[in-house]
Length: 281
Image (cartoon, rainbow, N blue to C red; front, side, top):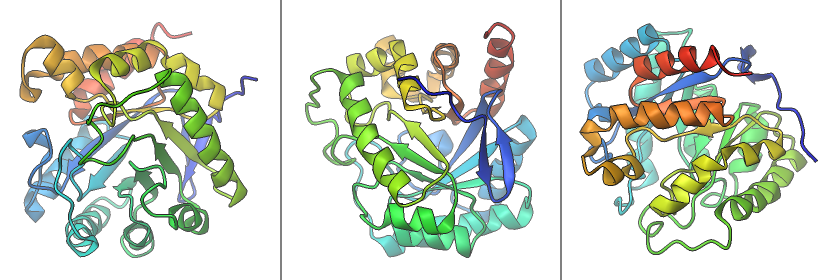
């Protein structure tokens, strides 16, 4: 049975109205993210990136220190925390009104990012699969949680992924984990089908075409299509040239029910939201 999506999520006592889709800007504190334009290292680079995204209209800023590109090298918890926690502290200090999300699958980093650094959301690419304590920690912290689907891990996820029905299989996967999250008291869950994470290009376009099917979960839907290989491989270009394709697919995602766009290029995504909102009904 279809459920109505919640109209708001609560991020640190701030009610975020999702009746108009929101934009999440990406800040990667990594040397090897798939899109070089999203890599930030120095304090000035991080602050300038956050400032630009806020000025361009970002509703959230997602900060990650672990590269999740296909084939990425695994790094230790210490190395990841050393990258991401400092960056979140910088952003929340300089921009106290910013709603910062920590992009991590490690519960200890998630906890410190929220308790010690001021993050207000957790974005977990593993959907609780890597760290079995994550769901419990999210419940204790009482913050919104992005539950993303990934088949395998970044080192293996693109090794011949196979689905009986990519949408039905992911919905079943979501259902099991949403039940567990509800059981431990997690209140604000956002689902992300994980474009490019253990999916073929055909799988990705099938997900986008049938994105509306995810409304059955009755939860806000986050979509991350920004400059991904489904765009540039299809067009025969590279990630640096994939902004136009990103905007096109983001518009389709919004028409098919996306509530949050996770992007490298905030200004363009905000423009897409404004235009699509004029014709959505």
